[in-house]
Length: 402
Ligand code: PLP
Image (cartoon, rainbow, N blue to C red; front, side, top):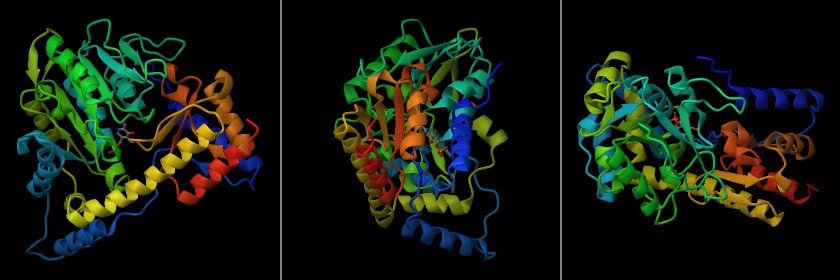
């Protein structure tokens, strides 16, 4: 394995540090990293206080909980995230965790080294790096592409809709609403992937971390809204962006009983029992306090309050999108996701434009090429900042002679 260091974020950090040292008075606006800034909502805080109190009393104190998560949370997840959309999920198919990144990284431990993995390009780096760590990458090319991984370009030219792989694959990572492009698939577009997986025996790993940001009716919230997906897809969810839990840590993964993967000798292995075995061996569950906090996200008050925060971020997204468009830049996403992906003027390289933004208007974005070769010539901005910073950043863009 020859996995390089995390080039993208360390490189950004280094450049920003050097610039800050040289220009201590520059007021930097950080729109690079996708972390939330709004505090936890009242309903969540109250539930956590109550849970802390319960832990202080012998009668209600809790020690180890079930590794898969407490029933009170799993039942809420099933009712509010799935039943409400006509999807039937069994409690034994839901696994509560400390977040989606861990699950997306750990799930690879179940698969054969021989499995061929497909990812969209640009892509959330965890999918690629964790597969490389598990030995499924092969050699790396000069462009930073792994020889054994199949890359599915998502660009302006194909409307950010990946084409089906041209060669057989075993595992397909899909993330919609997408990080980094902020774009989505409609139901027929996602159905095409489910049909492909059912036809070829491939497994889909569907990352729905940004589900709560979906505003348009034609965009599916869960892959299980597609007929047959319960036979070929695992879905990953997170409370990080939905409810500001990036620091609290909670998410969950749905592994339907009927979902299987191919072994190295081309046999089928069912994944629900295997994931359960993995989790009960290597994971001891999410804290009671955190799970009560997550449960509160589903209360009427909790849902209303979280929606207010999401609306706040999505107003920022609209300000960014409109601001970029007003100065003639092509911008995508930002309607069903808190990310805006834009093309640099005159096909300037991602890093060149990143440097100019930093030096000339003191705004930090993320260079698109850091997410994969198809991201070259693009940048990502996030809508997770404060309103004030977002407006100031866009004012700087407006008065910038780019
Ligand atoms: N999946 C995607 C696509 C993400 O962008 C992120 C976080 O940025 C995660 C997963 C991680 O989620 P969590 O905080 O639940 O680990």
